[in-house]
Amino acid sequence: MPTRERLLMDPQWRFHRGDISFPKGHDGWLFAGNFKYGAVPPQFDDSIWRVVDLPHDFVVEGEFVRDPACLNVAPVFNPHRNHGSLATGVAWYRKQFIIPATDAGRRLSLEFDGVARDSVVWLNQHYLGRHLSGYTGFRRDITDIANYGALNTLAVRVDSSEYEG
Image 1 (cartoon, one colour):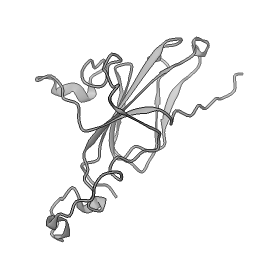
Image 2 (cartoon, rainbow, N blue to C red; image 1 turned 90 degrees about the horizontal axis):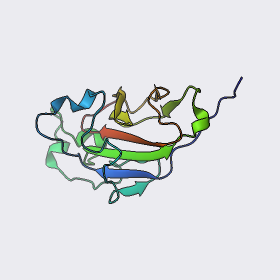
Image 3 (cartoon, one colour; image 1 turned 135 degrees about the vertical axis):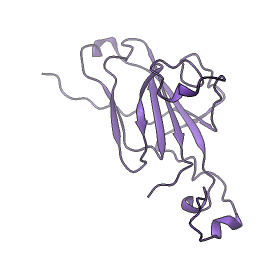
Image 4 (cartoon, helix red, strand yellow; image 1 turned 180 degrees about the horizontal axis):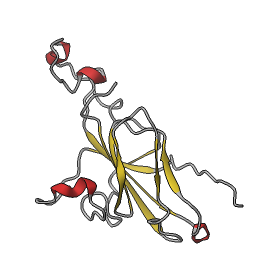
């Protein structure tokens, strides 16, 4: 029986703060089975994106916003109130990697310790799922969509606009 193997994928991710625009009329992009727009396809050029190692928190590396509305105690949603006056928003992470051909026949999964906050994950343009909580980890099986002995493209969209906790 083969032993379980865990590989760390934290180094060398491409990172872009901000959303990537999609063609008009493709509002179902979030849950598309084989999505071909934006930062999801392997041919998307992310060469100007920053290289970061995980864990990475794009909200914390932002600028503090001195917004009088943040001091308002009324129960009105303010995107800064629950993030310590840090600006929130959307960001993308991408990573390309090769899975050895010798791994064919093994069960493979991606394990995320946590992505804050609302994350959507694709591998090789296939929607793997959405996870709303930044406080809990999640796992996605990739056995049937992995490219063995070839390039794999992992794309993660993160939206920290809503508060949690």
